[in-house]
Length: 287
Image 1 (tube, one colour):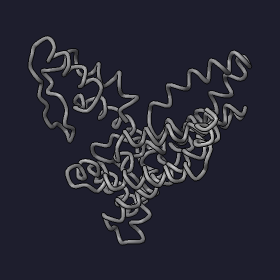
Image 2 (cartoon, rainbow, N blue to C red):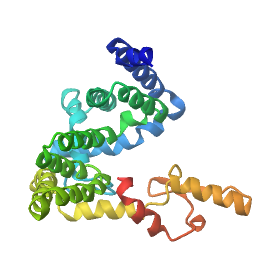
Image 3 (spheres, helix red, strand yellow):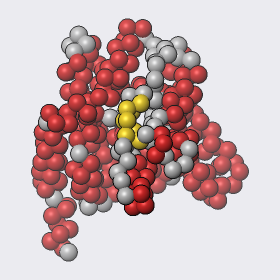
């Protein structure tokens, strides 16, 4: 156990592990059999960023499934478009660079928590594959982790504010909010409860206010939520795996999928319960 602890405590071992894992995943990211699938969402991000830099507004985005915090995040790698005259390849590389930086920031916080945590995180990345290089999940999780650390060190107002910011990027951090409220009420009563709620909504407004002030209608937010709720059950989702297994077990055949609205999902007639159940139940995890 002492030898194991020394291995995980070694900065050289951690540095070498980071280099090996990221190098391998970047290599995988550019392999032709799945490369187009990995970058398909970047086509939407690119159009959003291009339109924003032309109009300094997000405006109305057809088939938008992203919240304002995510749209603002896309502008960060989008800076490369201003430098390289809206070059598509530069935008792809910028996403990889930004997400690599986010990985390093995750590792910084995880190492503060324990010497083993960074290696667990690297293992998760390794088994997840390179898709995270081309999405905004790491940005959401980093803001959420910072919120947790602030809460741990009794910076609760800032923690609630950070949770609000995280919720403006993806919906699922909202599920942490009731836990914060319970702890606040238990330790500080109604006064603390109101204060934490106020800072949470302030965090939301820090992102939503400039989004609206830049000309985007509030209806765009509800439209993005509705777009996610109407999507077919994604073929790669846990729901689809469960439905597939059930059909094979009880009906002895494999179900099929189809493309609908840019999403390859299950055919509607294979859904065990109405579509709204899957998507409204899952909407917090789908954006």
